[in-house]
Length: 283
Image (cartoon, rainbow, N blue to C red; front, side, top):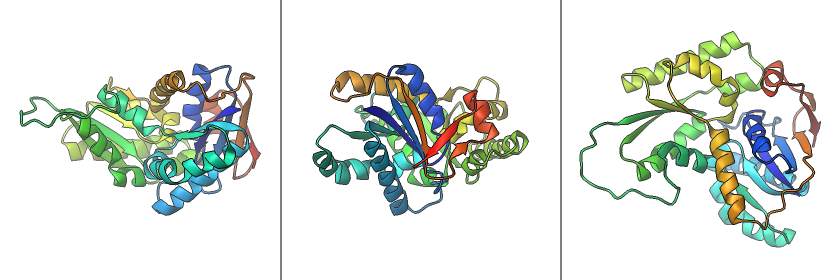
């Protein structure tokens, strides 16, 4: 058995790399749905169907648990799959399986509070707001998941979500760093103009963006804290496995990389991020 990691493309490698470092003896299977990337502009029902198909591929390949290393899939598809598909699928497989996302760990990291916590509504005036910018795909922005869930827990945090329609696709295709830097600078400028000043903190709300986190740091004011989804996800998953020892993660430290798209070596941008050539198998 193994831990499965699913993304629409190569962005989830940022989560995968951190999980491998946290669980070095576990077996991992990564699946990139590159035939259908990016998910950010697709209709919700299509995202649910594609995410379910990806999870089925990973379970068939031997995963016992799948991490959706994609904000769009986590925000649009996860709850539907957990409520309407997984119960019957578990019975069909006859073994424990589950699907988890990356938005819950990110919100826990952003608020410093457990997911179960909901703030008591009070009429007290908030003296100082913590301004949090979220850079994400259009679908994640439209879902307002960060605004809604953070507001339930912290009334002193104001969330401003900035959609970045082309950015994930540019990263997936290995665009030049100069073009990526210019696009990121425009998005940072846009959200800062909307807020009226620079944000106090930022979430890179698409795992593709972690691959160019240095460009976000350069575009934001020096020292602006970034909430990193890979680290938040690894921390949350470690806690989850402590509570759920029934999941078989494997012990052989094997690593497989699958794609629904063109198999082979990935782009130079991905290679530079990963630190070595990375070859994907076809599914």
